[in-house]
Length: 119
Image 1 (cartoon, rainbow, N blue to C red):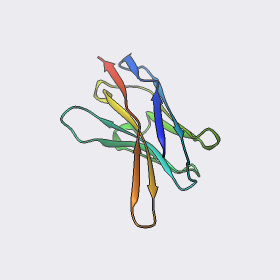
Image 2: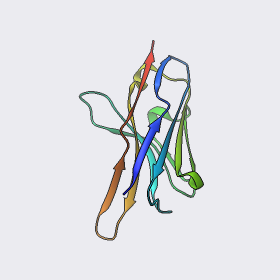
Image 3: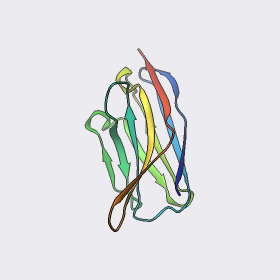
């Protein structure tokens, strides 16, 4: 069983920065992809960024150049450094582990952390 615990959300003014952290417990595989999603009420959850254990990264176009994802495999932790925040970044941010299985894939989710950017 994998559990994810996020921290670091909060209220910040536009142009400011926040750093999200997510610690995973349980068995974490080297093939697991860790990432961050976000969701606002009435909309689908969307991928913000993801990172492989080898450091390969992926970003949504809306956050490229402003957000940086990183991962500490020894600590089973993933971070999201968010700079130049905009009001449209306001959302609940969820940590995610994506795991490919032999016959199906698995998604593990944290409880979410609120990020609010004021204009």
